Image (cartoon, rainbow, N blue to C red; front, top):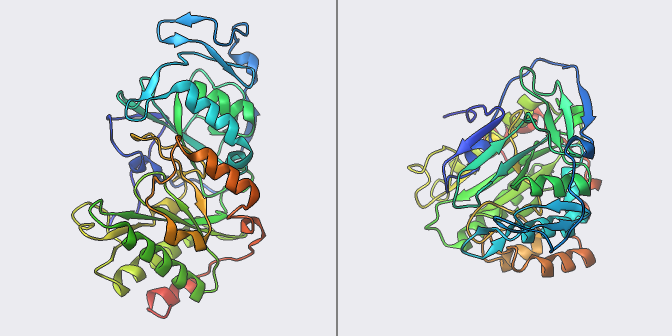
Length: 361
């Protein structure tokens, strides 16, 4: 079984409609204790035109303004299915910033950019480009041999990223200050599209029970696409090899314990009528769609954290979209389903991994 997806560097082209997940699990082994330099690109690195919201027009439509930042091609439709315009996406990211930024801040991020909308080519960008995005922080030395990796640490950076046609935001499982110590494990439950959603609900519940039997708390979110993400927060101290070994053991234990429901082997031929437990997001350099982030798919689904007692009432991985996300944000403002996430103190060990491998979970 393939242990990791092929490494991605810089900005890579993705054919129209191809899944960004192929780039999500990009992995790369790096020497220990790299020298790191962090630098935020000032807004002056890319001069802005004078403010002129909803008054200037161009080839693709009016120029708008969000958070004081000029948005070009504001009326360009980026998703024909939903009629979503570029300005709609940028405005959402600005509104969602209070919930989104805690999941982005100080964490390496990869971007899926769509300069011509979903009908054109998609570009997966892991590193700084020749023309840096204003306000986005650059971290040199975290991915040796490559340009700086990026993090989005402010509202201004988030809006600038959306202005530069980024739709999806994918984050690493570690923060920039402690890049060799992942602080979470992510299990992506990726179903055969032919499966009923009830099978996904059952799969997530089984995964939660297995982790609970090991003494681990887990959190759930919709992927914004087809499936669900199960997130296990960790205290610092776990290494990349340990995290990957544990995630692989969980996937293989699910596949061996419920062989008609799960597979731990990548590839559509192995996923027929099953759910692929993607553990490859737990290697150095791999990434996962961020919570409250939009997916570059028809309908513009959003990855949304949920409480476990809400799981049975969900209807799909893209249940929330740009069309209905505001109601969900209003609910989260009153009752955050992940309110206890930051309080969890737990770790994984070789002993837990061995228990899984021996089938003792």
